[in-house]
Image (cartoon, rainbow, N blue to C red; front, top):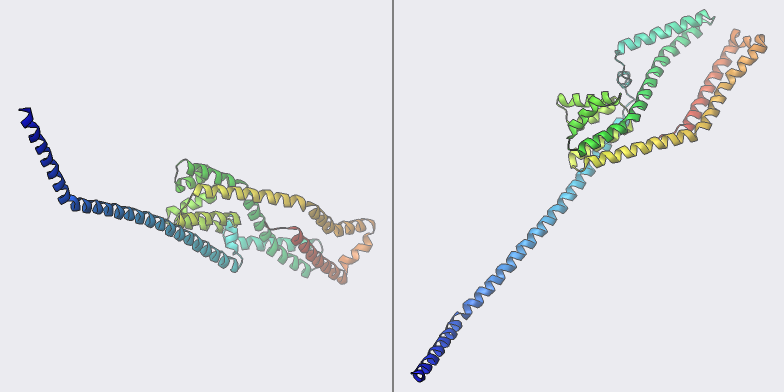
Length: 336
C-alpha cells in the first residue's frame, strides 16, 4: 500500500509544480507590468513631491523678493515725502506755536508781540534814546523777542521728549513681546508715560479714534515734535505695516540707536565746550571793556551816545559782532 501511495504523491507534487510553473509563466508578464506600473507611480509621486518642494521654495523666494521690493518702495516713498517736506518753507508760526505746546491763537500772539514792541520803544524813549532809535528797538523787540521765546520753548520741549522717548520705546518693546498689540502699546504710553511723550502719544491714539491708521497717526507726530528721531519712529511703523516683520526687534534697535545718538551728542558737547567758552568770552569782551572805560572815563564814552556818528559806530559794531557770533555759533554747533 505504501508502494502505491508514493508514486501517487510524487505525481501529485509534479502536477502541482507544473501547474505553479504554468501559472507563473502565464502571470509573469502581468506581474512585471504591475511592478513597472508601481515603479512609475512611485517615480511620478516623487516627481510631484519634488515639484511641490520646488514650488514652495520658489514661492518663498518670490515672497522674500516681493517683501524686499515692498520695503525698498516704502523707503523710497518715505524718502520722497521727506524731501518734499524739507523742500517746503519753514513751518508757519501757527505750527510753531503748536510745537511749543502753546494754546494761544495766532492773533493773540501778534497782539502780544506788538505790545512787547511798544513797551520796549517806550522804555527806550524814557532812557533818552531818539525817536528813530526807539522805533527801531520796538520793531526789533516785537519781531524778535516773542519768536525767540517760542523757539526756546520748542527746543526745551524737544529736549525733554528726547530724554524720555527711548524709555517709551523700551516699554513698547516689552509690551509687544508680552503679547499686546501695537495699539494697546501706544495707549499704554499715552496713559502712563511721562510728558511730553505722553501728550504726543495721546494725539496718536486720538487720531486713530477719528479714523486714521497707525502709520498716518505716527507720521503726523512730526508736525508737533520736529525731530529726526520721531521721523525714524514713523518710518519703522510704516515699514512694519506694509512689509511686516518683527516690530519689537525693530523698535528695540531704534531705542539703541537713539541712546547712542544721545551719547554722541553729549560727547560732542563736552569736546566743544572749550570753543563755546571762548565764544562767550569774545562776545562779552566788548561790553565789559566799554563798561570799564565808562566807569573810568564817562565823558570819553558818552560821545558815542550823544553824537550821531557815535550812533552809527555803535550800530556798525553791533552788526559786525552779530555776524561774528553767528559764524562762531555755526562753527561749534554740530548736527548729529
